[in-house]
Image 1 (cartoon, rainbow, N blue to C red):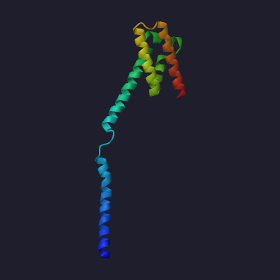
Image 2: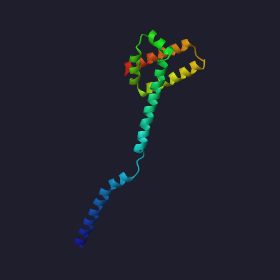
Image 3: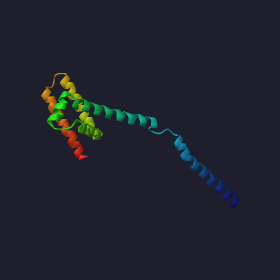
Image 4: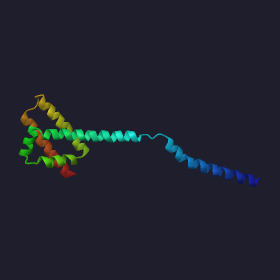
Length: 134
């Protein structure tokens, strides 16, 4: 009887090792909560959003009013352009949205040339301040 108990415990031990060894393999077979494809799409979406925000800000600063604001602030467009690329995603999103809104308001006649100029000067100040704080 003692021999049977030893043999049964040995078999159970071996079976437990096989089950334990197979568990990680089964875990890998299960679908992940977020697939690699979805992660890639999310990263691409974030990059596109950032690029769109940079473009909105650059479009505003390269406009006639933007050039006036840069001259009156004695700032070089190339330096400001480089600074735009260094802004955080959050700062860039805020400035990109403000740039689009200001351009739309100006195009619709809801804003004067002088108002747009002030907005651009303020945006330049925010860019410089954001970079100084980072």
